[in-house]
Length: 584
Image 1 (cartoon, rainbow, N blue to C red):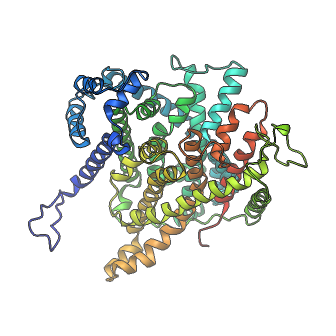
Image 2 (cartoon, rainbow, N blue to C red):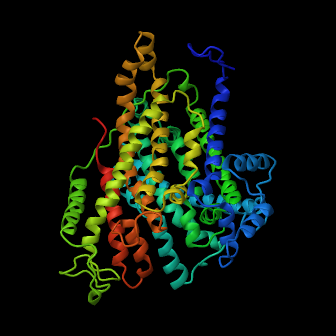
C-alpha cells in the first residue's frame, strides 16, 4: 500500500494512504449532501413542525400547543446539525427514521421504491444499449471495411434521439399508446406491462446520447495507429470488430456508467407522469412536503447507487485497458471526424432565421379569436391556447433556453476540463456523488431556499453539468499520461506546465469541447424539465420547457403547439453535434 508523505509546511499532518483517499472523499461528500438536505427546513425559513401540521391537517390552526405536540411526537430536532447526526446514527444501523407526514417507518417504503427504480433503470438501460447499437452498427461496419470512424449519420441520429425531452415522450406515449390505443397501462406498477412505456421514454433519449458518446470513442479508436496496421496485416472482420468494440468501450465506459447511474435520478419526471412509485417520485413528493427522513433516505440511496456504478465504471476502464495503462502502451490521438460544413450551416441558419423573425413579434399578445389555429401565412407556426403567436414565442424563448444552455455548457467545459486534467488518478468521489443527484431534485432543493425561477433552475443544472465533462477529461488525461511520448517527456525533464500545455491540453480540450457542445441540448432539456415541473420559468414564459409544459395537454387537438419547441430542441441538438472542434 502506497503512503504519501505529508506536504512540506504542514508539520504534524497525518499521512493518508492513497487507497483510502477516494473512499474518504466519497464519504465526506455523502455526509455534506445529507447535512444539506437535513438543513432544508431551516434554509427555507419554515418551522418543521408547521410543515408537518400543514401536511397532516391543512385546516387545523397552528397554535403553540399543536406545534409542540408534533415536536414531542416525532422528536423533531432543534437544529439541522443535531437532526442530521441523529438520522445518520440510525441510518448506519438500517433505521431510516419515521416519516414526518405519515408516521410510518421509512425503510420499508424506501426498499420498495429502490427496487422499482432499479428495475425501471435497468430496463431503460437495456433500451438505451439496443438503441445505441442500432445507431452505431453502420458506423462499425464502415470502420472495419474502410478504416473510418462514425459518420454524420450517427451524429444526426444520436443528436435527434438525445434531443427528445423524456417528459414530452412520456406524455405522448401516455396520451397516444396508453389512452387512445389502450395498448399499455396508464399508471401504477403491478406487472411487466407497466414498465414498457416508462422504460422507452427514459431509454430512447439515453440511447441517443450513448450512441454519440460511443461514436466519438469509435472515431478516436479508428484514428489510432494499430487499426491501419491490423487492416494491412489482413486480420479478419470478426477480430477487428471485437478489438474495436473493446477499445471503444474502454474509452467510453466511465461515461456509460455515469449515464446509467443518472437514469435512476432522471426518472423523476417519467415516474411522475406514469405514477410509478419509484425512488425519484418518492424523493420529489418528500421534498415538496419537506418530509426530511424520506428525503434523506432517498437521497442517500441515490448517492450510494451513483458511487457504486461510478466506481464500477472506473474499475472496468482499468481492466479493459489492462497493462497499457501502466506500460506506456497507449497511443491516444485526437479524434477527427470529417465534418459537414454545409448541413450545420443550413440548419443553424434556418434556426437563427426563425429566431430573428420571431423576435419581431410580441410573445405575450393574446387574441382569443385565433386560439389554436394551425400554421398559416399570418401565423407561420400557428397559435397556442390563448391565441399567442408561436413564432414570436419561439424566437423569444430561444434567447432564454439556448442562451442559458450555452452558458451552462461553457461553465461546465471550463470546470470539467480543469478538474478532469488535475485528477491524476481515477476514483469514485465527489463527481459520482453529485451525478447521482438529478437536476430535478437539486432544482426542488434550490427552489425551497430561494423560490422557483430560472436563476435557481440554472444553478441546479450547473451543479451537475460539469461532471460528465470532468469524467471524460479525466479518462483522456489518464490515457495520455500512459502514452510513451508523455513518459519520454517526463524522462527528459519536462516541467508540469510544459506537459500540460503541450500534451494534456491539446489532446483533451478538443474532444471535451465537442462533448460540451453536444451537452448544450441536454442542459437545455434539463432546464426545460424543471420548467415543466413549475420550478424554472414562469408558466406564461416563452421558454421552450414552459411552452411544452403548457401545450402538452393539447397535443391531440393542436400538435403544432408541442412540435414547435420540440423541433427547436432537436435542431439545436443536430447543429451542436455537427460543429467541428477537433483539429485535423
